[in-house]
Length: 378
Ligand SMILES: [Zn+2]
Image (cartoon, rainbow, N blue to C red; front, side):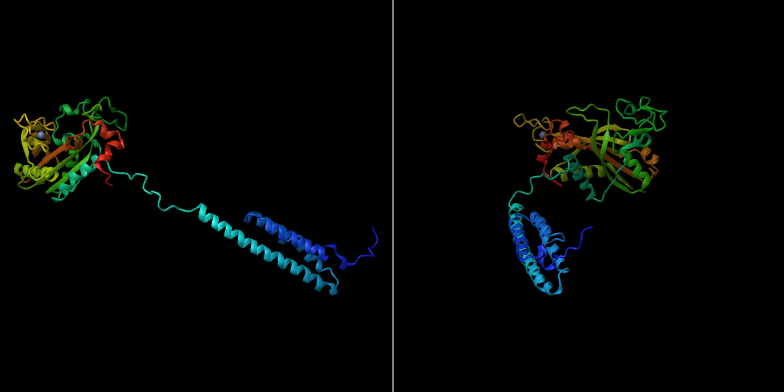
């Protein structure tokens, strides 16, 4: 163990010599001045003003001084620390101002740049067409009705007077859905569930759900086992109309059809009916509309041929008729009291002749170059 240091004089503490304090102060000021950014300044701040900095350690030495020396040393260190803190604050302000000026330049937003380069989405022309047709009837007081696309065979066929041997029930026309219990598979075609082949089952459902009178329009997607080609698609869209009330006749049907084509194609349009057969209507008719391009002027007029109607003057639109009383009975409506009319047609077909679309595949491939000319209605 060494002897006590007799020559020890606390006034002569090395860290508190004025030139040392001055050196510490100058080092701190130099470090702050050299800091080029706020991060470096933060490091310099910790090194020169933190608890372990030379000036802080020197300050701590003051406590060990004799009372008469404390005031002078305290003043010396205090002045140095004051100068250091002031320089730090000044440099901090300078660097913050520099950063703010740089951010303003670097992160400036050019409000004149185009903002709409991402094209807005739009509804498919088939949807727009279907809604346009439905709107005609909604404005006449009809209700839009919808039903399931995976449908019970009874609704799709039986309720609509399709006999058990009707060719539409064959596999070559209809998608049969495999039964949940697996006992009846799609090969047998006896699962009792089909992808609906027309929107007519919605009519049967509506008649069962509501009390007559019923005025509904049923737009929707339907399925048939057709290959996709220029004029066929296995998934397509129909819109059907059903009116059931007391005293409805074919004159009401004809007037409704005329109103529809006039709303869609112009005030001078008209329709004609040709006899046909459908299981769910009796009598049934094929409905044609006047060619909306030549208005019939191309008939017998070789100088003005019409491509749209092949110079026949009429365009086949769809099927219609008075609701078969057997359908009304199956759906719980008294055919002695009520009568009704119905008609339906394909949306794809109407879009094709209305807009000269030559290939049905264009409608299902989702290429915006096809949909864009129809307008970007949202
Ligand atoms: Zn024509």
